[in-house]
Amino acid sequence: MKILKRILTISLVMVSLFVVSVMGLSISYETSIKKVVGRASKRVVLEAIELCVHIYDPSEPKVAVSKPFLSNSDKDIIRDFVKIEKTVNSINGLMLVKHGNKDIETSDFSFSYQPFEEPELQMLREKYHLDDVVSIAKDEFEKMVLLRQWCRSQFERDDYQSFMNNFSALKILQRKVKKNKVASAYRPCHLFPLLYAQVLASMGYTARLVTISFHPDYEGHGNVEVWSNQYDKWIAMDADLNLHYKRKNVPLNFLELHNIRYESPDELKIIYGSHGSDGLTTVEQVIEEEKLDPENMVNYCSYFSVRDMRNDWATNHYFKGHPVRSSVLLWVDEKMYREFMPFDKTSFKKDFYWSLNRTEINLRPDDGSDELELYFDTFTPGFDHFEIDCDGKGKIISKQPFYKWKLHVGKNSLSVVSVNKFGVRGVISYVEIERSLNAKLTM
Image 1 (cartoon, rainbow, N blue to C red):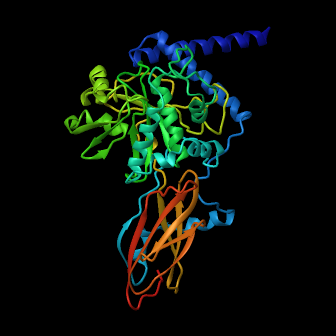
Image 2: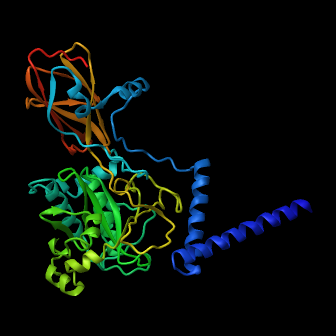
Image 3: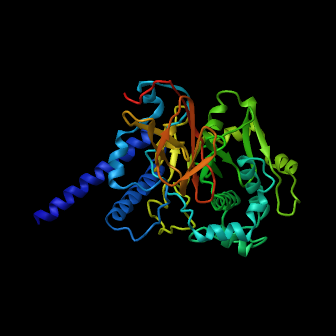
């Protein structure tokens, strides 16, 4: 009897705390109790599933390689290394001339990357001759635009494709259903971003799904952000409407679009591609029908989120409700109307816009030697090797992160770039150092 009373008392206390919390959230966010209860319940369920998954996870995900292999002894050694620009001037006889050695920016929120060893990606690339699609491109960004154009040309907006448990661009393209009207189907602004993201992955590029909307209650419009090595940042691509945004001839991401409405919206340019697999729908018709003026599209970026904190759909298959499959990251700042949402949130740029494919050049000098001992750190999904170039003499291929740089008198230059398994080169890092005639490499 005493045990039953205790259980009832604990239950009553928990229910009371839940009611008080709901009422507090409702007042704080100025929203309905019904909405708060629904969203809070969803969060509780997700947290419960996540706890269970920590105990036992039936999924066996394959993790994408993102950097060179390090042994335990290597991990101890790299603690002695410091970014080269921070320490080289303290070495007798050496002077830093210039450098481009950006930090690797990491997020506090995890993202699951597509392993590039996935055979389906290679099949997708070969079957649909995607190398031919990008053959006329002058640079990396043009390749991405051409691939977006190709994806958009495969279907009309009313070619609804039926849902599948695990999205596969290859299977979608193989069955290529036309004029399909089914209830359980991908909306165009869901289908095209998923299709485009996997096509990009098959060519060695990393993309993620981003949803934008006028208001957090609105379901929103699906998009893609792709990491650009050329611009060293994430870039917004609308695979459904087949467009991207520029300011001063530089492609923008969704945070930049979000901020531009408060800064200089008149500088925004929308760059369109064509619509329709048969060329029947012109860009002008789409613009006229949907009023895709810059001001309207900027307002559409009032709220935005990474809809899946993963892009490994081709390889890793999770049950519905799995925390990885259900992960969402919202951007929040003081410009937004406060809204209670049951998802992870951040207002720190590095959490939402972490970097990829950069290489940090780090230094540990050897006393009395004419060599500098370097360690290259990187986060490159699908990492394969580094390309190193000393004094412009040609690239040296290395799968190892350690390199001994032999210096001569005068100016010495070194550049390094990570390369993934599809041969895509990342962001180049470089350093130039001058060595005096009588220098000895001692601290």
